[in-house]
Length: 97
Image 1: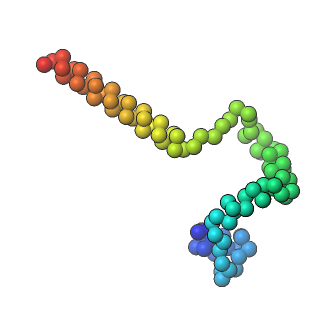
Image 2: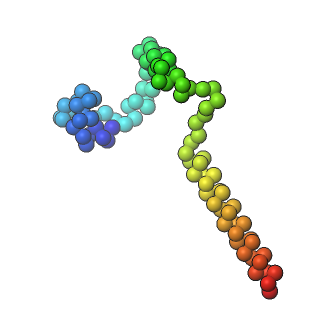
Image 3: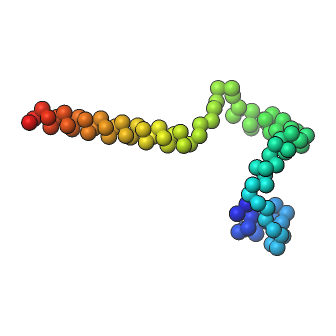
């Protein structure tokens, strides 16, 4: 929604004049369930999911992962690596002493 307020092209595409107020960003979220239960949404999703370019992308085997999980795993892996390096460093130091 912020982009609509900043760029005239977006306003034009959205059918807004330069002076029209821009909706609140939560409007779509608040109306999501109403939109999903509507006939237009059902028809749109049916056509989208049956589109020739979309069908190959769909599979029961695919899943989505929240990027925060990936980031958390990266931090965990890096921490484990640092701990291993620190432990190995202490072990070699302890042996030489």
